[in-house]
Length: 235
Image 1 (cartoon, rainbow, N blue to C red):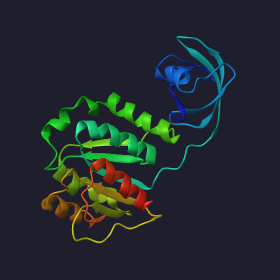
Image 2 (image 1 turned 180 degrees about the horizontal axis):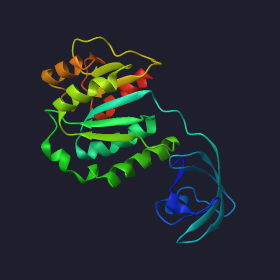
Image 3 (image 1 turned 120 degrees about the horizontal axis):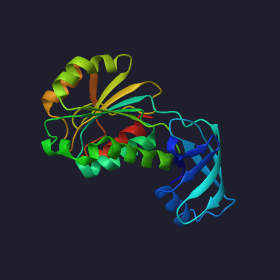
Image 4 (image 1 turned 90 degrees about the vertical axis):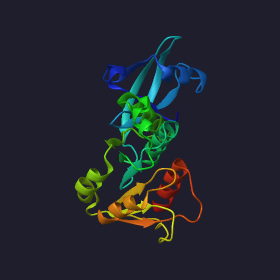
């Protein structure tokens, strides 16, 4: 945890917070904080700054906080992601939050197992928990927007064209396609498929919606690896 993220419920005054949960444990066991220490903090959805530890007890800590730094800029990106398997979903959510993705559409695909949509990891509180972990890692305060689309065809045909308007639309997909571009400074809509990739029908629909397939080479990557590799290459 490189940033203590503060919720509205933590504040007992405009410049005072009390922590009693895992953040307190982290301060005690990892930071080994002592009264008088300074810590980096951020207000969810707001600014970052510093905290001065006023009181540290076994069950709670009180900090004086001030905020004067904006969070880092987000990537100019909308990520369309075929829903990964549940255990991988948690890691991917942390990754996209840490790398500064502002909007993620979790999308159905032919190769997405129906059981994946029943996972408790898709519950709003569970999704938020993983996003928070990513923000803490990267020192960011702004949660990505997560959109769930369980019907591939209606989303791609009816809503995706408007979403991709004015952006460079790309499909990460293995095959005889142009290499993924590097170091862009324009807005991008990027679609990454499930393990095994999109099926040809899905690639065709995505292409009709304004996206073009690109590849990273002959190797087939896990979804979590492909997300990191593609974002790093693009930006």
